[in-house]
Length: 231
Image 1: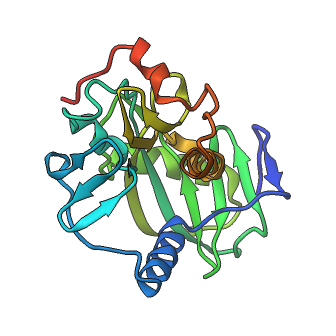
Image 2: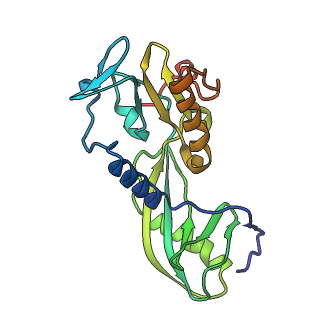
Image 3: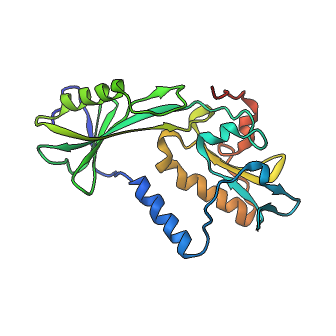
C-alpha cells in the first residue's frame, strides 16, 4: 500500500460480514422455533390495550425493523424524517495479497475478508432512495484503489445499497408515545454495526423492565421534525 494523501490502519478494529451474520441468526431462530417467514402488512396488525396480533400470532408488542420501508408506513410511522444516502462498494482481489487490517484513506476504506478478497468502499449519494451499481461509483472507487495500491487488482463484484439515515444521523429505538404496543428500531445509517447493539439493548430493556429509553433513542424526538417524502 501507498498513501500519498495520508491514511491509517485500524489495528484495533474489524469488519462484520453482515449477510453471514444475519443468515446465522436466522438459522438459530429457525432451530429454536422463533422464526416465521411472511410479508407483514401493517394493516393486518391488531393493536389491543395489552397485546398485538398478526394472523395467528399474539404478542405483547411488535417492533418494526424495516429500514427505509418505514417511509411507506402511513399507519404507524407517517412522515419519518429520513435523509437516505446510497452507497457502492467493490469486491476486489489484490495481486499483492490482502492487507492484514482495514485501511482508511481519503474518506475510503479497504477491508480484507476471510476468503482472501477485499471490499473497497464506499461512495455516498445523499438524498438517493435507491442503490444501484453505477459507472460513476465504479470510477470513484477504482480511482481510490489506483492511488493506494502498488500492485494490480481484479474487480470481482460491484454492489450497492441505501443507508437508512434519520434526522440528526442518530438511530431510534423505542415505542410510540401514542401507541405503546408498537415499537421502532431504525435509522442505523452507515454506522449500524456500531450502534445496533446499543440501540437493541435499550429496546430489550424497555420491553423486559419498562426502562425509559435514552432520550437520544426515543422515537418521540422525531415528531419535532418534518418528514421527507419518498419520491
